[in-house]
Length: 235
Length: 175
Image (cartoon, rainbow over all chains, first blue to last red; front, side, top):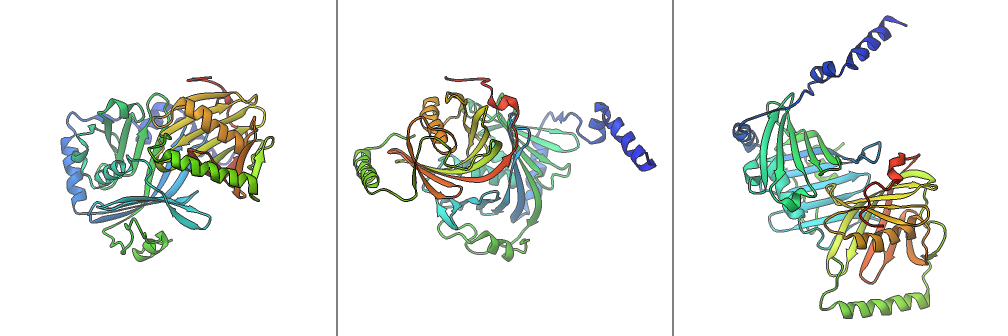
């Protein structure tokens, strides 16, 4: 065995000691903060200057039943006027778009976009909450959630639904941010009892971009490729 | 969710007329399924579906389905909404028995048994009685009922055996 592989094996064997790895990789138990207010205020201040976001995301559906998580990818657009577009680009194409007046959902089928009629009534509320989370306006969610914060290598803000009926389908939402609260890295939605969860991991982010007209149009939305090209985020 | 409103009788009547016309005239893309799956289904594997459920008087709902299949162990379908919230979890054993493992807030267990499981058998399994599936493409299917229409697309198929627990009845809510 070469020196290199002996070193690798040595590191791996040390990492088999759980306590070492947990500390070493910064995954130690989160330390709850007695009062989350300072964290929430700092987050809101940090985000107040951000006019708009374009963020790539990977959504992982982790079901205990299946050995592998089920992934989808896409983009999230948000602007300061509370307009939002959540677009899945792989493995299927679908998007939700909401502006101040309306909300719409589109599905790509047989080479063309189809606008869905009505749909889930709670979607607008979910979209509004998503905007508030990304803008650091967690105060706006206090009516519906009990909010707490904890820190380890990351800052973890936990939202627990106050409504018992909601808690039957959603145990909690966790926002994971770096210590400087500069961006939301992950949102984890935990389901009750089963241990199943949906993890949204945010990747490449562009801020203060100017979205072209039509980005948030619910009737004639601009194609995502044109949006990405206009803001310089196209691949 | 799928109850009709005041105009539903008129709507149902027109749909019955349409259905009769369709049956009389025939349709080149419709398949009357009794035995083999209409869809291409691996012996063992995990499929991801995207579906639009158009419920009469209630609108259209985009759904994601995760279907584990095994020729010898059965089928297990989990249906989720946009952000992952689970709407249904149903297991169909090779003998055709249906086990509703979980029902979300939108779908009652009896609806999952009567409609979700039946449609699943129609497209991906062996239906006990003939059912009409319209094949819109190699991986695109449609089933029309009087009270709803289901448009299903297979977006990915990963062949390979799934864990044993997938096909076990763990927390049945009904049999």
